[in-house]
Length: 482
Image (cartoon, rainbow, N blue to C red; front, side, top):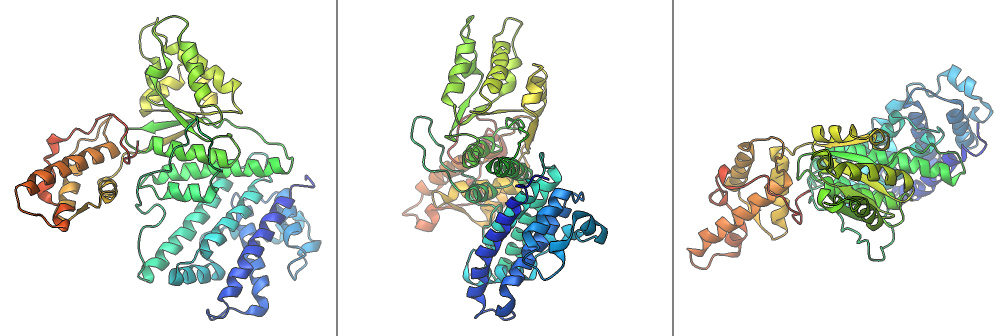
C-alpha cells in the first residue's frame, strides 16, 4: 500500500464534514428532529456510509481501500475501527452490500433536500459535490479505476437529482431542472486568439451539460470521462503513478444531435481538469484539411492542430477523409492526424465526428487510429417530444410561445418526418420554427393591429405541411444543437 494513497480520502472526508456541519447547524432551529449534540457525529457517519458504499461499488474491497477507510474514520468513530485490519473488515463483512447506501437518500440528505425545496437553497448540491469527491478519492486508490467505480459516482448523483426533483414536485415548485429540458444552448466558445477567462468550476460545466435537452446516455458518458480525469488529477496531486489513456474521442450520430455543443463543453471540462491549457474548440472538416496538390495536405493538417493547440480539435464528417480514389490526399490527412495526436498528446484533444457506419470505416483505415480513438460516444436522434422542447426553447429567445393547438401540430409534424441517415434533429427544429414565424407574419399582416399576445403566439395555422421544410439543411444554427 502506498503510504500517501489513503490521504486523498482523509481530505475528501474532512471537506465533507467541514462543509455540511455548518449547513445542518443553520437548520437546527427550524427543522425538527436535528439533535445538535450529535450533529457532527451524524455528518461523519454519513461520510462513512458513503465511503463504504463507494468501496463496495465493484465488490473488490481491496487492502488499499480498507486501509484508507480505517485511516479516515478510525479516529472519528466510537468503535474498534482504528485497531482493525483489512482482513478483519472483510471477515466481518463490514462493507459488503453497502453499495445500497448510494441508491437511497440518507436521513441527512433528505433533510437538506426538503429544506432546499422550501427556501431554494443549494445544500443538497453541496452534499452531492462533496460525496462525489469521496467517490473520486476511493477510485483514485487504483492505478486504473474501473468503469464500475466511476459509474457509482454517477448513479449516486442521479439519485440525488431524482430526490431533488421529487421534492420540487411535492412542494409545488416543479420547473426546469438539470437535464429536464432547459435551453439547448451551451456556453460561449473560447476563441483561440483571445486570452481565456479563468477556468469554470467542474460542477458548473456538468450542470450546463445536464441542462441540455435529451442526450441522456451522452451526458452519462461525458460524466464518466470527467470522473476519470478527476481521479487521475487526484493521483497526480499526490505523486502517484497514472496510467495514461487516450483522451481522444469519436462522436457518432446524425446532424443536429448536439455534437458540437457537447464538444465545446468538453473542451472547457478538459481545461478545468488540467488536460489542456486554453480549452478552446476549433472546428474543421475535409475541406479544411485536404488540399488538391502534392505536399499541401500535411501543412493544412498541421495548421489546424496549431490553431487548436492546448484545446480541442473537432473534425466534422471525418469519414469523408477516406473517400476518393487511390490518389486522393484524404489518406495523407489521416496519416498526419495519427502522427500529430501522438506527437502532441499532452497538448491537444481531437474529436472525430460523423455517421456511425462511416466512422467505423474511418477507424479501420489506419492501424494506429483504433488505439488512439478508443472511446466512442453515440448521439441518438431526438424524440418528437425532445424536438418540441428544442422548438420551444428556440422560440423563447424571441418570446414566442405555442398555444395548445400549435404544440399538437408541431408534435404531429415531427412524427410525420422520415428518420433516416441525415435526419436534421435540432437543425430541423430550427428550420420548422423559422418557417412557422414566417407563416405567422403572413397571417397577421392581413389583420389590424395585432396584440402583443398574438404577435408572440404560434398556432396550428402557422405550422407548415410536413413536406415544406427541409430537414437536412446544413449550417451552424445559433441555438439548435449541432
